[in-house]
Amino acid sequence: MQRIGIVVAAVSFFVVTSASASSAMPGADPRWSESGSAVTEYTTSERPLIAVAHRGASGHAPENTLAALDAAYQMGAETVEVDVQRTEDGVLVLIHDTTLERTTDVEDVFPDRDSYHVSDFTMEEIRRLDAGSWFDSSFKGEPVPTFAQALDRMEELDLNLFLELKEPSLYPGIEQEIADQLTERGSWLESNPSGEPRRLVMQSFDWEAVRRSKDLLPSVPHALLGRVPEDRIQEFSWAQMINPNHNTIDATYVERVHEAGMGIMPYTINERSRMDTVLDWKVDGFITDYPDVGQEAIAAHSRKSPPLVRIPIPSLPVTR
Ligand code: G3P
Ligand code: CA
Image (cartoon, rainbow, N blue to C red; front, side, top):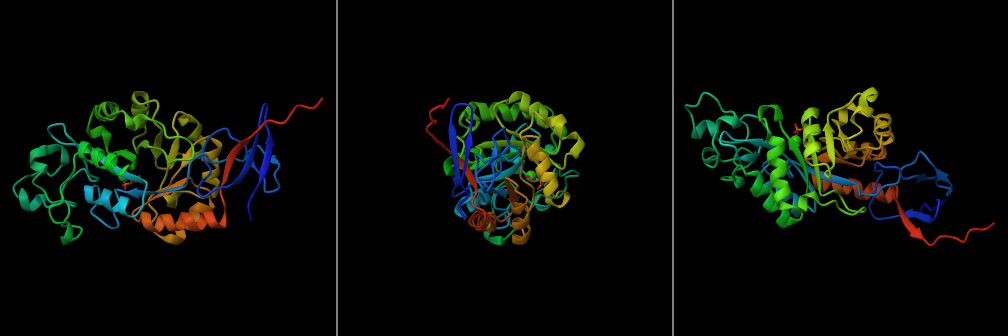
């Protein structure tokens, strides 16, 4: 059933109707009842629901590689999440772990090293590593990409980005270096119009680093990773999202985050039934290794619960 509502605002009216893609989103917008009467605690969406491709489409290709970005794009994902860290000689690279063993052949290439920390290797050394074979032999030779290479590829493919500062306390000043690269490119700092997914979200489990980044990039939405205790959510009103582990939240928590005017996209949800559950909780999206499955879940949810958008209509004459 299509949901239609009308609200009387100070100077204008809006019709609320169903749309192809939308979700609850933070903000001061009123939401609407099925009967059409205004319900002030209900918040309309201004952005579509999204299935963020975690570490690229990491269920289908080696995480945090250009191949994973390509796979996400090929599956129709609009937004990818990646992790950024820094080499010994100061190059920003995409990698999740703080050490290189799990996702590269570093132990074969450098058998005599006593540390495999990302921060102990130069970019020239990291270029020699294979970051694809551990996942599947068809990805043999896939390199660890630099952040700059990944941004190039995302720009080429018109992918939006959730960028995680991974263990930023290990890399003093990394917030500034990332802000500089993004600012040089310009387009990442442009806010997408309502009705489109966000171009860029900066996020970290290190909430102090998120704050530092927000100070450097005030126009960019920032997310706190992890579950902010309900009684502390208001402390973080400068942030735009809280993205917790899906196993740590419930429908009430989602509501609390929305009441604080923030969005919420839990991670990392790979089971279709769990995607359906969090969508019923009215999350704004979720982070998944399988954006293909995620998009199916969102499409099914939108058919079941057509989202609401506001369409302006002319103001009515004032009657006295
Ligand atoms: O985007 C959130 C998610 O990536 C956080 O967990 O460990 O996969 O970086 P992790
Ligand atoms: Ca991550």
